[in-house]
Amino acid sequence: MMKPEGNQASPRLSEVLACPLGLSRAPARKGKAGKWHLGHHGSYHPNFRGFDYYFGIPYSHDMGCTDTPGYNHPPCPACPRGGRPSRHLERDCYTDVALPLYENLYIVEQPVNLSSLAQKYAEKATQFIQHASASGRPFLLYVGLAHMHVPLSRTQLSADPRGRRPYGAGLREMDSLVGQIKDKVDRTAKENTFLWFTGDNGPWAQKCELAGSVGPFTGSWQTHQGGSPAKQTTWEGGHRVPALAYWPGRVPVNVTSTALLSVLDIFPTVVALAGASLPQDRHFDGLDASKVLFGRSQMGHGVLFHPNSGAAGEYGALQTVRLGHYKAFYISGGAKACDGAVGPEQLHEPPLIFNLEDDVAEAVPLDRGSAEYQGVLPRVRELLADVILDIAGDNTSRADYTHHPSVTPCCNPHHVACRCQTP
Image 1 (cartoon, rainbow, N blue to C red):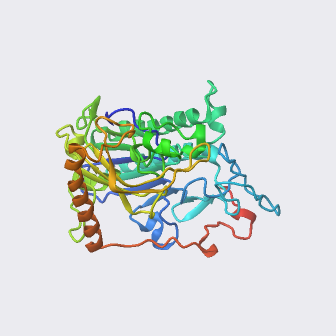
Image 2: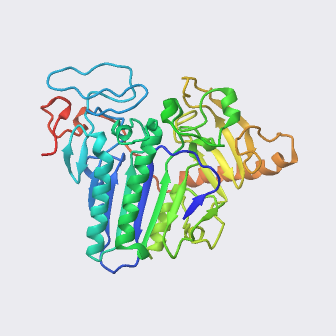
Image 3: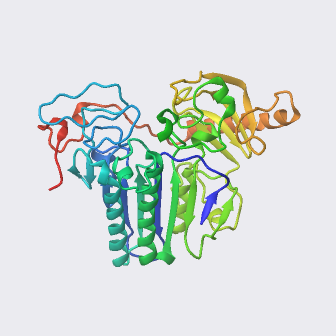
């Protein structure tokens, strides 16, 4: 089992990728289970984005009302029934659209029952693996779990005899779900299957005890300015996440890697392991990480660029540069913390630079007059200028996130909250 260095930040959303390689020359079967959040109509639906099978919800499970809202801060209201109007409460989720559960192009349940969703994901994922393995076809299965995102299902607590708090109970359920997928792989295609588990960001601090922990990645400089240094920020507590790789006979067991990797590496790595090649008419930010995963190298990225994730600055703009164990902030700002405080946006020119090898808590930036700072700064500036120029000259596309009532996914628009249930 391969894991990242140190005590990593608790993830909000977890992702599992199962990919058998070298089974046959037959066309691979590609499946997707869980959260998608890249569009659900027309060409944006998973079935039109390369997946043969899809089972899941089209966005985060706090983005619609449900009959089983679970734990949340503030509470996520249940869906309206019959002619009862929606309740207008202060909330982070909506009450006017029920959360749909898709199987391929069809909504099979609306509003989704969060209490049974995890087990349904496990059943559909294991069925997909079984069918693909029985047919002798290679497969790729991408599972985007709702764990550890709010709302957390109440059944996670009632099913836990030790009475754990909601976050711990949800973590236990996620562990069980991932275990079911791994067990199915071990029974069907263990020698040929590569499992990759990771998260997409650190804890959502404003959810308090339902957020998880940043561990040692406390972003102390930011906490003294105000706000949270976790999700929505480019501090280590926001962007640094766990990763596990499993492939018996290929990935060494009980090995910790210090290599700097990114979730952007998953795509080029899987493509390379499948013996395919990437298109040559565009640039890719990821790299083939197979040598790191197989224990043959400790060389990952020398440089990473962190885009603003919502806490400060222009959304999506590059504002932080990681160069080896140095990290330079051109813009800083805290996300909403548990107490509701938000740190102010601050521009830094020259940037704040931290040495993560000595200061993983990002507490004290290097003295701008020091030889260490002056030695790093020119390289940071050069790298940032180069990548901005590269982006400007590359083939780019822009997603249209405009929302209109006509694109709301409803199984029956004549019912309140688009209500329909699986027979």
